[in-house]
Length: 248
Image (cartoon, rainbow, N blue to C red; front, side, top):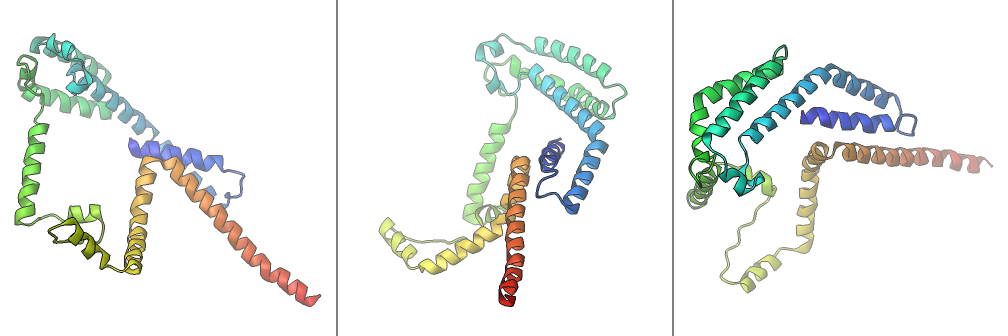
């Protein structure tokens, strides 16, 4: 669903530039491809959006996450109220899920899990202070695991991708000693590696912008394209003008 929304934003940005300086054969073909993809996936995107709406309804029925609700509202609830509301909601969901492949698949998964684990999820509404999930406990286990790996050695290299291609380990007993070690690195060498790191991070940054703000990312590319097109046209015109002056 997120990809479809990103493609919609890209299509809107490209259509805004029709008839302008950026319009050429490549962009005309690109717009047709994007529009064809949007048209072929429009029905599926609507079904996914409807399925997402039902997921939000189920979360609201379960009052999840608890941080989104006032404590007084949660204290007035009990397992029987939630069970009745959930049963009624699933009946409505079943009626709307007919003749819709995506909704039918979602309903089957929700109804199957509710029948298996629904009773176990209701204890948190009867026991005050019992969390509805174990995310905080898993987070604690992950922190303990990371600390243990720092001592014994990591098995994963994911952190290296997050922090860049270079990591430096300093061993110092004071801030003054640490500063002295850092100053031993030549400034020119440091700046060279910083530029290499920035170049290596450029594709990842573009992908991040394209996913977060697709309209702005495509508009930025179009502006760069216009600037480059203007620069190339000026460079081709200069030799012609120079040759004309030489002939005069």
